Image (cartoon, rainbow, N blue to C red):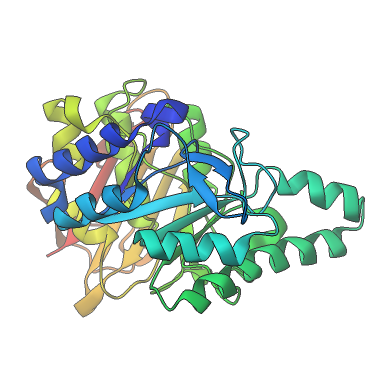
Amino acid sequence: MGWNSWNHFAEKVTDADVRAAADALVASGMRDAGYVYVNIDDSWEGDRDAGGNIQSNKKFPDMKALADYVHSKGLKIGIYSSPGPKTCAGYEGSYNHEEQDAKSYAGWGFDYLKYDQCSFGDTIRQEAGDDLVKASAMQRAAYEKMHQALQHTHHPVVYSFCQYGLYAVWRWGAESGANLWRTTGDIKDNWSQMSLIGFQQAGLEKFAGPGHWNDPDMLEVGNGHMSTIEYQTHMSLWAILAAPLLAGNDLSAMTEDTRSILLNKDVIAIDQDRLGRAGYRVWAEGPLEIWERQLENGHKAIALFNRGESPMSFPVDAATLGIKSGAEFTDVWQKKTTVLKNGSEPLVLNHGVTLLRSR
């Protein structure tokens, strides 16, 4: 859990923005709710010195001082690079400098690395052409190479693969050193892209577990192009999926609605449940979907998702849900008790969700 600079600041992010984000995580209560990583995305990079060591650009005058500041707030800090010669925004990548870059990150005190394919895709195409076996092997080797470099520093780092789910990364990501791996293309702050990315996680749940997670990309909550109901659905789906929760909004300008979504302790508890089992789809009918997630101590979360364009009711079948008819649940958004029994038909708004936790 934490925050990433890209969705709001993109290439304009500065040292001051990162420090302000750290301050806001503390002041808003987000740090205490579990949002502890402050992650700098692309565009911090400068040129390499005569020895090939990566330097930060003028927007980031002192990376160690920045890391020290974030750590002083009781937070951790993340950085970004690519296995290719250039990052997605055209800055210096780590190609052929993996060991040097890993040492730099460790020396500065960084705790997290997002490693984004970017220009390495061109390298793969140039060398592998249409040979998918060779292409897959090249990508895996590139990500494993940085994993080894990080290991050699003896500095603990969360390692995030960002290669958009190519070559079925969920099948080999954990073996190659990933703590999380992107399963899809980039998220956008709209209902269509968010829901497409989120619901296509069905079937991937068996690959997730403690220390290695499917990553459907960062949160868009609070960026302004979805409704409150849609953002609640976004947050609920990520929680059911056991997905990383990396906020991507301007933390200094949160509305009360945004705050209430990102800080809903019951939704966070579902996402961060210590059993570490990702949720799965148990029923679908047209735009209606029911997902479940097994939680520790025999508890269960159930989410009723209405992807349609009008309010619709859900026919409850206790056997399908694996519950006893008449079981009581807490509705974690409405803060009320809900009883699920055969024959009941709870209504869910269009693009909405009812997220329940067993009592």
